[in-house]
Image (cartoon, rainbow, N blue to C red; front, top):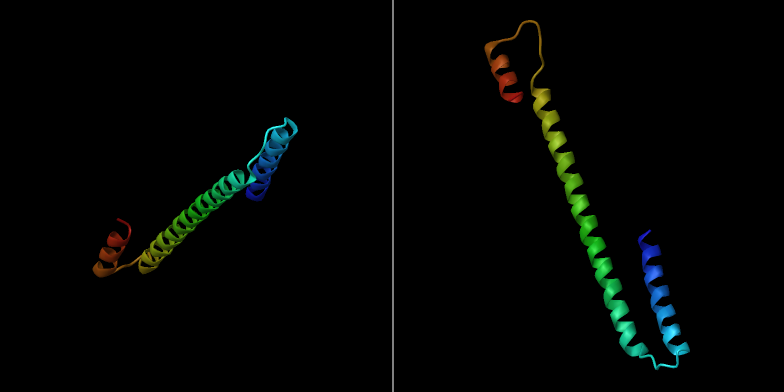
Length: 94
């Protein structure tokens, strides 16, 4: 989908250049091309930052889930428990 948006931007830029050439105006491909490259590289950098942020959030969620599971493994509810086991379960479930 992101590739499609880049293609759309490139197509629009080429169409705009063709329209100007058809109108008899001189186009400056040297000026339009760097702007297009800058825009594409800026979009690419923004996409990369979003993906990195999503990956960090996913890693944080996985780590929190694993930490919660480890805490819960420490406490096993049984019909008869010692005071130390009860204290451990109280600590785990707070």
